[in-house]
Amino acid sequence: MSLCLVLQYEKLICIAGDTRGSIKENGISYCTEEPVKKIFVIGDKIIFTAGVAMVMENIIKTFEKSEDKSIESLKNISIKSKDEFKNKYPEAIEKGQRAVELLIACFENDKSVIYNISDFNDFEIIRVIGDPQPNVIGLGSHCEEAMAIANKYMGKMNTVKLYEHIYNSLASESMGGDLYFYMLTKNGIVKSHRHKIKDSRPLKMYNFIDNIKMHQDPNCGMKIQKNTGSPDVPEWEDKFYLSNEGTIITEEMIAKKLQITDGTDEGILIDAKTRKIDFSKFDTVAGKLTAENLILNGMDIGEEFGEIYTHINEKGQIINKAENKQQFIDQYGLNPDFIKRYPNKIYNSSFEVYNPISLKPDYWSAGIIERNSAYDNSVSLKI
Image 1 (tube, helix red, strand yellow):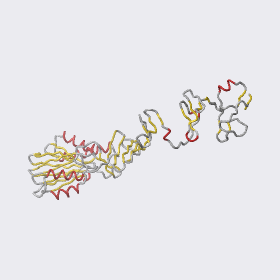
Image 2: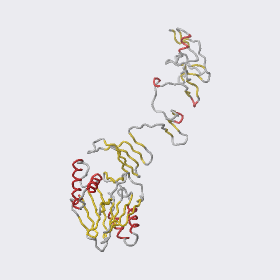
Image 3: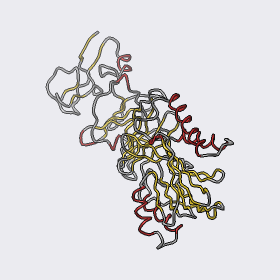
Image 4: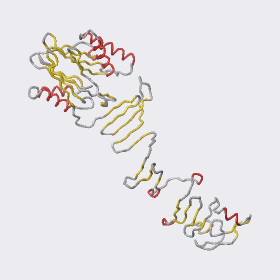
């Protein structure tokens, strides 16, 4: 919306406006990233604009090109511009929203005059003539507060410093950016000044990129939405959310060189750059993997108390590290090479898979034995 503040004297007009672009959604104001020019010098007039940006831009461009620079001409251009926009975008202007707001400063017959044209008043031309007593006029965001400060300090401090103080004090999502200040007499502009308005707090941001918009709220975080509807009837869906605590919620994510850590400097759990997963830092594993899903080589397998008994080498062979001997690796717990060397018979051997629960080797029918008991050369199966 922005703020226009006018100090009107009989022979002098001070007028200023800011450049903050803003949008209101669900009753909440957001500032846009791009500045928006709101105050224009056209001929002998200084014009402040507020309302729907596309409508106001067309009004100013048309009025600049028009040979008729009268207030009546500006009114007619404003009515036509709003009607054209509303016919093209019937859903763009909400009920009760001000689409056109103009405040014009000029001199007529050596006296200061302020005009107001607004669709809120059905485009009625309101005219205020200056008199010896100063008149304070506010239009737009925070106008009541601005007028109160102006009335309190007017005549007690430098006029330019007063304007800077007012705009700095009231900066918000709907007012800010750069302050453009003008002093106007019957002879034209006698002073102009530009000031960078200081924001006293973080602001809620709202950015458009085609059919994407971004909300940035210092109290909540950042949200990105996508329009899944049409330009005329938008339907905004949440696609990405980043909280102030660092939590990310999104539908899909593709990241190059992603690292997932446990919060410490050395605690990298998954490193996409080096293609490594550090299982030693995981305490709990949920779910199971079947053998068909695994290609194992260069892996150590631990048993009791973390002691490593078995190693799978790069050829996929299972090696007993304690005895440095090859173990059975087929689905029955047998080494195929063993079967080839002893055709038609399978002997019990120290290479069979040991079952720590039954305390027996698999396929063994005798009594309980110790881990290192010898049970070689007795036949388990004849083929």
